[in-house]
Length: 340
Figure (tube, helix red, strand yellow):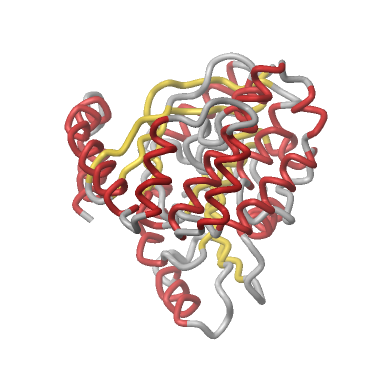
């Protein structure tokens, strides 16, 4: 890992933020250390509360990587604050973010640097992402076409993962990093502001693996609702620029996500509210009606089981797609991730 910048190889600062999930951390760090691109500065920001088992476990992991810049928060703040700590420490021309439960394939940084060096009019790079869960390939997300702010507003999963953010350092600093008032949707909020200023290169090749078992997919309904209201309040101008049908799609999508969160809690008041709000923007879908029925009978788990079954049926095809052109090393680490 080379932390000096030269004209041929501009320095890239990779910021890994870590909170719990310390069992995954070594894997993320190793994926950075095995990049084919040598001029990399690795920064790990520990957002665990001091004195906890998680902090001690993370410290033990980082003892193996003395050349990394290891920064420890004096108290738990949040993911946005941890990323901003990394940004302040970064020395690179480019900044990349990596969640502690994700990995890069070995050519990721080289690919992103090449794209931005060859296209100085662009400020960032977006790549293909494969999501994995429970030992199977869940789905592939490729960079959206067209205007990126619109794409992020209409699909909060358009990035695939917060690890799919690779940008010029001066651009990251010009928007003052991440908004620390956001506990969720931090990546989408950041992306909307970044892509309001610049376009991004789109690389369809899958370069990032998103581990979905390392975080909770079922947010607290009320907190999730508050985050969405905060997001909507902040981006009134951008939402106003959407056409009427697109605005309906946006608001229905927000409430559909909230419906899923409410179903996970069997929060019947939240479910009724979400269904009522969805109905203001479009017809409630058959899947959404099914979710409500399952929750009434306290068998929401059946839906989750059906979804896992269907995803597993498609997993083999996705695996073949992802591994078709991978190096032997990348194929091995990918298979190891799937095996757990």
